[in-house]
Length: 324
Image (cartoon, rainbow, N blue to C red; front, side):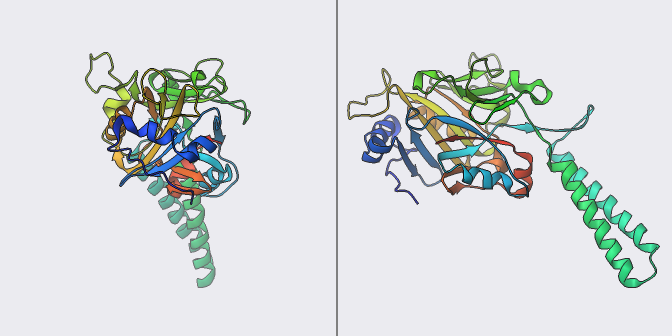
C-alpha cells in the first residue's frame, strides 16, 4: 500500500489541491493518493503520468479486473457506459438481463431433461441432465453478459485501438474525455462524439462539471445535462476531472505540475451529484463519470481501492482509463 496523503477531499475545499501538490511525494513523483470516510482519490500530474486507455485482454470471468491490475498504473478506473441489443428491436435493460438469463438457463435445463430421458441408465440420465443444464447456463451467460458495445467511440494510439462501434449512436448524447498531447492544456472534456485528433480518449461518459459548475438537472438551464438528470442519484461512481492551477487556485505553496492536475475519485457509497459537488468545491473545471454502480472500479498500481466489479459486470466491460 503506498503512503496516503492526509488531505480531506470532503472538507478541505479549495485548500485541497494546494495541500496535495505541495506534498513531498507529489513534488518527487507527480502523484498523491488518499481517502476520506467514503471515497478514494488521486491527484496526478498529467505530464509525469499521462492518460492512457486500456482494453480487456485474456479470458475468464475476471479478465477485466486482471487486465486493470496488469497495467501497474499510478491510478486506474473502469471505463464508459456500455450497451447491447438482442435484436434491432430489443435493447438490453436491467430487467431484461434477469429475464434473458433465466430464459436461456431454463431452456438448457429443459433440454437436459429431454436429453436425459432417452438414456437407459440412471447415472447416464443424471450426467446428461447436468451437462445440458451447464451448457444452457453457459449459453445464457454468453448471450446476456458478453459482446457489449461502448456508448461512444474509443481511441488509443498506445493500445492501437480505434473502436467506432458507438452503441445506438449514443456518443453524441454523452460526454468524452481525452488528451491531444501530454501537457495539461492538451487535455479536454466535452459533450458529444470524441473529436478527431485525440491520442487517448473515450466517449460514452456522464458529464458532472462544466466550466467550474455542477451540471444541472433542470431542463432549460444552460448547464442542463440529460445524463446527469437521469443518473445523478445513482450510487457507485468513478470520476475524472481537470483542475487548472493558474488563475483559479492559490498554489504559491509550490507545485511541480505545469498548468494543472488530474483528479480521480471513486466510491461505492456516494452518488454522481455528491461526487460533482465535492469536485466542484476543490476547483475542478470539468469532470466526467464512468459507468456507474456495480461497474465502479479504482485501483493504485496493483491493488484495488474500489472493486473489482462482480464477474457479470466484468464480462460487460471492455475499456478503462489509467495514468501510468
